[in-house]
Length: 499
Image (cartoon, rainbow, N blue to C red):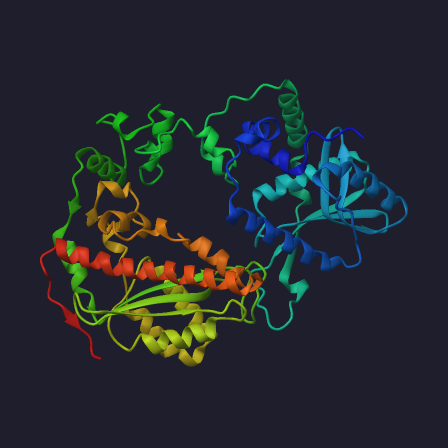
């Protein structure tokens, strides 16, 4: 059998960007370095697919031993169908150089039903395009397909005890949408095959398609002409693409009279002047809302697609860690407390009780982007109604340290339009650095915690230390940022809550 030219994944690459498909086939060495988080996402998707097979038990897995042996899977699929097998996993078909492997293929009477499994909680446009290619190949292989559906996670399912596989998944037919796309699919297959056959790299400029629907793994190559510093893409609120279309790449190239939104205009003005914008009155008013003792608080969470614990849903945020710095008076001694789950059991009950034991009944709780912590507290109220009053009290005390930067009461050109703590901290407190830590952002913290249960004792100990260091720096960063803001403004009247 002739080796296939397009697979489902490479066809989707070509639909996103023909240049991505060409580079994948002809210049794979230009691919970005492997992304550990992305690999973890792919691994989680594989696990979801394996669980979905339990909706149709006792099927035969046709997965070949390696990527280069799909011709064997195609032949085996034909043989299994010929001998009367009715449930196949990864059934492979090939038509005129286009290969597809169906996650689950089921025969009922004389008709066949195809199912594609996705680890999302809803059907997305790219899933329909994916299924449309599968249908195109199956029909041209003369398999009588009655329906094609997407199986995805049901985000209304709440685990209680053993996983209920039927309730965990939802199944949606996409046959109508797939049929509408058949002519387009055939045209696209012809275009992509011709492009690959020409051996000529397509000329495709960068654009929003570079990350839609998925980040391209050749962006380092295609974006090499974009300056690493002071590019137009540093401008806030998406102003960069219009500027790039108008042939500007750096902030210094933008004409003075170029139309920009107010946020981008302010950013550009301060980039050029190097001046810091400081609204003393607004900052002072913000600081007077802080009531001592101050509790600087940060949560870390994980979001398993397959719910691991009772009373949890697919992709629900599960808080597993917090860091807390407490300061009784301005410039006073800092006390640090923390919690980190064991990585084996549901951490939420111990997390909640430990948190409540440390936060007292008064004093401002300082968070950065408080909507995240408030949402987690509201979820804990639902889970532990016996603590509802105390948890609700915490929510009323939260103050968002991001506000002065989001509202640009303090703006430094080195923020480059961002108001995240990762952008603010290096400017205000350069001595504190996330990039010197083993864990540098929340996504990696979540990934590492979720894998603790698979590690040996030595590795787990090292990783737990790294998790503590990362979360501790988040709250220490907020302490130091408040200190800097106080130094920048006339010293406001301090308020103190009741102990």
